[in-house]
Length: 322
Image (cartoon, helix red, strand yellow):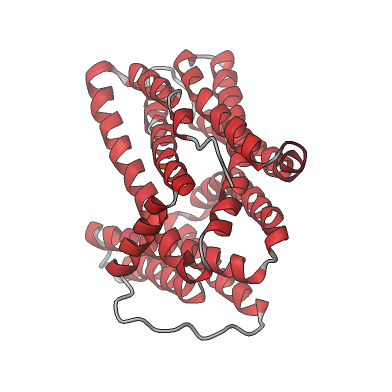
């Protein structure tokens, strides 16, 4: 994890360094994006393994709930703060600040201290590990359904993001600050949902929470087709996004906890890596297809198609969870 933070720090710092030297190019930005994206995947996989090793099984749901809360807090606060930094100091200084955040993350992880067993080195840790991760997921009856459901839901939810930007900032005439507000305020639902996850599981059981929250998150996005100009249109987006984020914030920590419980300790990194790569790839593919569809029928109709398809995704949720 520390190594991945340092990789992201160095990669991002290369941007302002190249800018100062007059050598910054589009190609470098692409390479930096790829390196940072790959480091993100490795970091997430390693963090899952570290969490499973550091936290007692009975506390995993609490820990995942707190991670979920932190993630939505960062999502709500990060873009406005980034916008202020860009406006006040420019994009180069903002990139430096982003890079420094990864350095601070590495120092924070280092401060955890404690001992850790030296991992056993294997000869083929790359593609072979990913294949093994996919093989484990697809061979597990419940994780297989959750895997397919996650790819479908994440892809169909994210496909509306660029289409909404086109609608809101284009023909509907929303100002950029209104667009940011429409997605920042609903992130408060992430704080609410992540706090509710544990008591809901305690009262209704993990299976019921996964089914209900997983179904609920699929029902909200269809409401985005009703977006229109003016304050009431902004309220429509906020209500839909708040409901979606709250449902997802209940589902995610429960799902993440179940997944960690099912994956053996020696397969956590490879399984989470394969899962993350597949999810990101599905988002990219579905978003591209959504853009093509929007070019033919318009962004509003494309958002509606994604919303209708989402309504079918609860059928992929497992009915029996051990």
